[in-house]
Image (cartoon, rainbow, N blue to C red):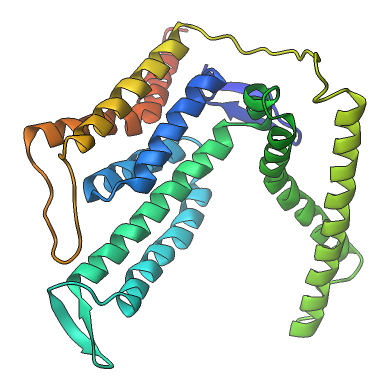
Length: 307
């Protein structure tokens, strides 16, 4: 199942095994990981979420995309880390003074925690956009909130569409002689011309999609829709795994274990057995897609070796 090919508009791409789970199980999984990663202050949880997201994203991106991601995320983390001490001067461990205000160790580490949290959340949101397609969102929310689900699915779909259309417009402008000059103003005019064409194309495409959906009776009461999604045993396993691991982690946190504070002083990582059990549960949750993909890859390679 890992190396199946699917047609998606402009070409063929590999369909990941994790992508073939039922939308309900996928929604529960991504919601659990994202909510825990966003609202947990524990550096162990943040690092586990980041490591799991990196491993999962590595199965869906090329080497060039990985390098591009690093050139974006690492400066972002560094920027948040260095910016937070300029605005927050809390903490009991001053390192030096800048304009009469203390730059504390706690403020720097808190900024680093925010930066890595932002990296982890953005990474998981990218995995979400790769897995949760517009068809799955329409399947989940099309009947309950048809208009909002249509807008969300169109918004997610428009990001790659706009990038591809922008490249097409740039190539067309280059054939017409634009981008030939090295001057800054000339290149700016060329970019504005491409942007103008892109805005016009996006508005026209949005109108066409809305008219097409209206002509098909989308959102009308009693309208039925074809669905090729079937909730199977493996979907139940993923859903139960999500509920058990996320529930265990949240229960441990509600009992007062696994907490972490930066201000006024660092509290230290909780190493009590129950706190470690909560971290282990979230580790299983965060690395589940990578484990599933790895297992399917090994199975595929084993089957190929028997041919």
